[in-house]
Amino acid sequence: MAPSVNTPTHPPGQVRVGDLVDRDGRPFRVTRFHWSHGQARASGFVVLDLVDISSGVRTSEKLRLEEQVELAEVENKDMQVLYLDESGNVHVMDSATFEQAVLPPELFGEGRRWLGTPELAVAVSYFQGAPVAARVPTKVSVRVLDAPLAGSKEDGSTPSRHVRVEGDIAVMAPAFVTTGDTIVVNTETAAYMAKAAS
Image 1 (tube, rainbow, N blue to C red):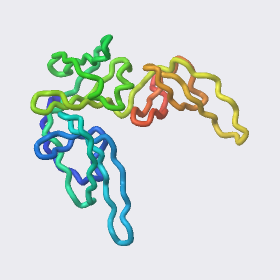
Image 2: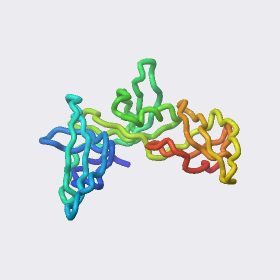
Image 3: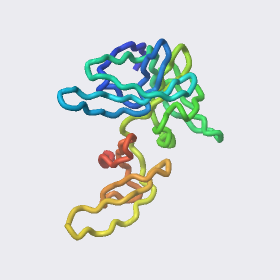
Image 4: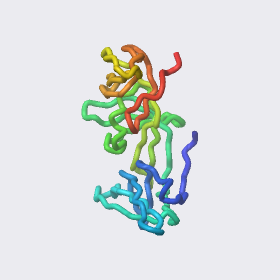
């Protein structure tokens, strides 16, 4: 996918964690999104927790559902993680131009724990030529490194337990998942989704 410049607006209910919103010409990253239900006949609100990309200052904003949120004008690039160096910096390559860049892991937010996933494709957002945010895919395929035997449940339901996957991440998975399997995991919740096609 070619780099694109986007300046859309969205209702606050469609804004997600990791999005960049424009506040007086400055980009703020959404770090948390939650609903605040109205009372009586009043409609609800959306509360966005934000962090100023340039200063790191955190703030929160309460928005009515009918308001519009302006996303920051950013250039999005599809990139692939090459490796993490000894300092934890993330070396990536532009999938279209093959140019390489070095990104701080903080740009990935909570998603940085998945950076050890092999051949990981990521989306990097640039604001005025500088990388300001990066996002891992919602779903990744990872190999199970350790899957302890699951105990039986008296109610007859299929037992689940934590397995350890690449990146040394614990994922709750069904009993039939074994060491060496490749599974699809939701990166936002670290939840098992399916066995990867062989």
